[in-house]
Length: 234
Image (cartoon, rainbow, N blue to C red):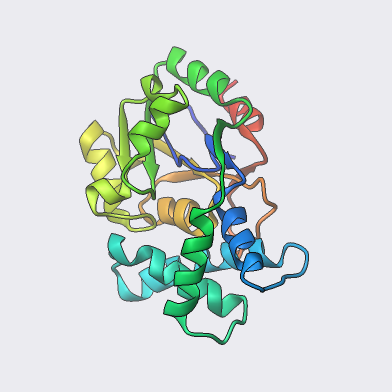
């Protein structure tokens, strides 16, 4: 369990950590595949998605670099591999992208979001968002009325860096004049958030609400929701 006594800041992932969509982004991709004639067993798609996120981290560690502009293509290629689909990447991507665009959704705060952020603010924690996103994270925070809680909101498209790259974590630390030992990073994705933060020397808290696999059997402080995360700061 993380000792928060020496912590001054909490970094958050955005999507499926503080705010989600109905349907979620991975679910919309799954629905797009299904619309195009693919079928999956129970939890098969989300397991492949989470494994693909983990494998991005492994590729990053092997190559010591990952470019923001390539991240989505890499994720999609790994997803196709893990779903065991033997079809052309560009053809599948084009079909899925069109289908995803047609799916309506709404963006909502995850239960406990405001209570947690207000609590941390009242205790004088510095708060930041680090999101692999489309350049509109600030607008999404405004739309869900959480922007005012944060000292800084970092969007991968805006800064041309992407989790799990250590660069995006260091960029945020530098912007806030923080040391890595003073920070907790919390998010839902094992590869992007948890291993990414650990690789940057930052203590992570994994919001494992999908019951995802701890692929490397690491000792990770893990919670199931924001209420349980909030209890760490009691």
